Image (cartoon, rainbow, N blue to C red; front, top):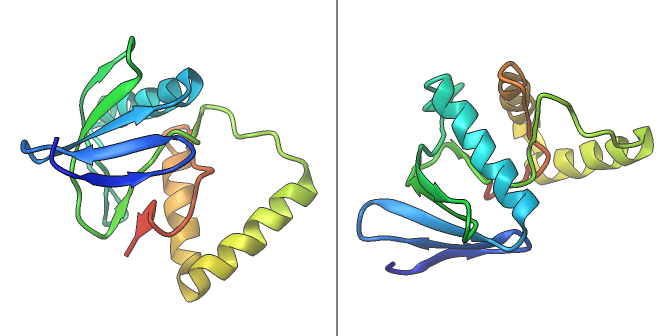
Length: 138
């Protein structure tokens, strides 16, 4: 491992000297979600969505909750620990309204493009919920 690329509630990410990144997750359900999204992307040979690069799964470790993925450059979509597969999250309408208002503020004039990306992922049964600058970059 070379340097820390990021950290947050989900875990921590380091770059490697092999043009990849290693993500260690804190909680097994988050690891399983992220791993399974990468597997779904791999199953459909998805390397980009509407021009946004998507990391490719290199390997994962179910015992240590670690994922190795390829590095991507902007524009990209990444960080799938908060994603849901096949079933959208069941949030009350007022929570969704607040979420949309927050995303509109975060992405401003780019929000319509982000919404198209979110919709494109849904075609493969991937429901993104951790949508924010940093996870979707232009």
